[in-house]
Length: 253
Length: 231
Image 1 (cartoon, rainbow over the protein chains, first blue to last red):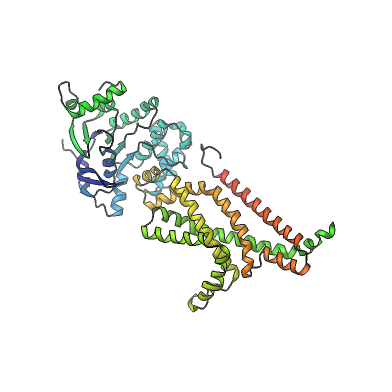
Image 2 (cartoon, rainbow over the protein chains, first blue to last red):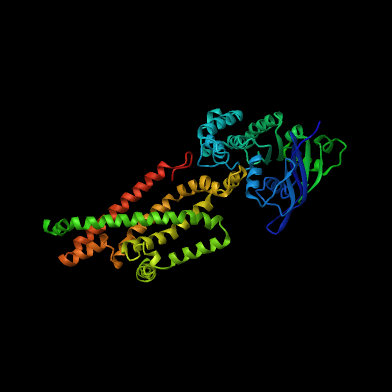
């Protein structure tokens, strides 16, 4: 079967506040790929994700969307890319002055120039998909963390992204609210959504991911299937790291 | 006792027409301040460094110089000089009301810039990021996400600004705007009853402040974001 590369980063270099946070990172996502970024805090996972939809403009390297290079300096190419590359944030980042439904429909109206009715309809469908049928008219301050994160997933999906980037989507949640978000992510995976996710939910993502990508000090040091990297006899840095997390959370890696 | 209030009753029509000039002056200058303050606050936060520098200078000047000095400086200085430039003659530079509204508007514009800027900075930076991530341009994101929230949060401080500008508007009498204070002074000079008339003018200012602040409080309640704690 021919694989179709959706998003590819080549040799990305990014400096932030005088530090080189990414020192030449290359990663490619084929259609339907689910890759999971793991690694210690400060290793550059979040920065890499934000470079992939150009919330951070890299100092070096190139980015290809559907095999076409993206010109970072061209605003309209930048906006185009961001529409096609959805992003889920650790802190949800919902628009506080808009209801759940408006949070989802606003970008359809402003970016995709859809009519009010059409956008509202789509927002309803997306919110139903994440199980929030009865919360559509509530405002972010009236929602729990898990509900907020589900709204933010609905908001990203409404734009019909080709890739979804998830930056520790459950790290800011109370333990008992994590599973409702993971269920939604698992559904997306089932439906073939291409995803790159930074997370510390090792066992959950090991069951889901096609590839684990281990980052340390601004480079990718290891990558491979979770099975390979976490095998009984494997001696990977990834395995050590996962074992430490497992020790901490009581989770079976 | 009736005699004490007589001067007020006699001067009432004359003073009320001055009251309308005061109201027009305050609405005009608060409006101008809003027109200046909203874009300037956004540019002060997100704009090019040179633009930020320019806005900083503007705010610094109008915050630093007393309104009274600005009235003289503009009316007898800058504006009377501009009035001699022929291609600008369609603008009423020699009009005292125009000068007063301009000075008060630019002054409150500087303060409003600071008020809105503070509110923008108080918002979580993640919302702008999320808007960008959805493909919005910075202009769209600021207009549809940032400002609607920042303006809501600015209402209490804006209401404060209204009461300050209302009272500063009384200074416009020095350049001959026939507003409430200037009319009070001229009636008082003729009737030699400054106490009653000044008290009455003060009462009107008090009522105007009260109505404005109450109205803005009602607006604040009306546009409050649901789920946020009521202040």
